[in-house]
Amino acid sequence: MIIDTPAVVMRTIPFSDNSLIVRCFTETQGKVTVMGKGVRRSKNPLSGMLEAPNILRLHYHFKESREIQILRDAEFHEDIMGLRRDYLRISLSHVMVDLLDRSIHPLDPQPILFRLIQQTLIALSKPEKPFRELFWFYLLHLGTQLGFKPGLDTCQRCNAILRSAHLDLESGTLHCPDCQPQARFRLEDESLRSLKEMTRIHLRDITPLHSSVETNRQITEYLIQHLGVHVEGIQNAPSLRVLKQLEPSDPDGDLQKSVNP
Image (cartoon, rainbow, N blue to C red; front, side, top):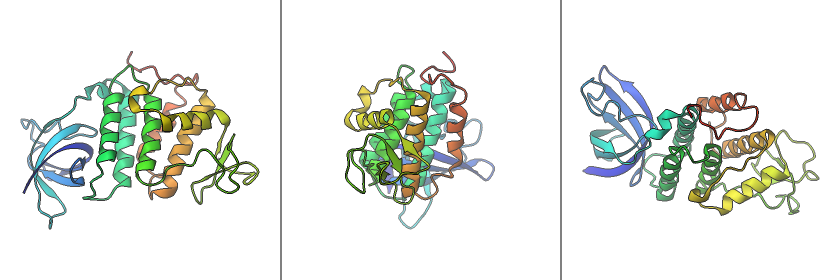
């Protein structure tokens, strides 16, 4: 059976002298691994196409008894080349597809999650879009679609309205300072308000928040830790190292500027 579907490339692994194993998140079948035979040959037009985080239209031979399907052909489905002109944006896109890869299971179609990663990558490729806020939006809604929607309004112990909050690393829930006086991860009022705002807006309406360096750090750390409590292997993902490289290079908190203006 030939499958024809849009797909986001999450990871590629060289195989033999001229082939690639490609792990993709497809719209119709979810996570699928395909083998591109001979695609690493210099004259093969697919050689530069099968790279994360490209959005392609794949055609592959599918057989349920096989773990690795055979790629027949591919073509670009969406233009996100703008990512490759900006180090920060392409780096964040690789974090996004890596976290997605670690969070989903093979052959489990999730069309809403596919639209989330596809539309976020498209927005991230546009230089006028605020990439930090897009990254936060993606992490927040990735957790929600996986069934781990953050509870940002009330303490999960006493039900008090949260003005600031501490993250419980056992349960991944937020508690008020009275219920959990000491915690490694804390969200102040500005961070909570920014996160709540992101639950109410559409991707197309995201604008820069112009928040402080500390607020930026709190939001990023919280979203990664919350996801990591629920999804094994997230917190130790090598791709997350790029987040530590981004903050020190931007002491004024203005990561909206491209490194290649």
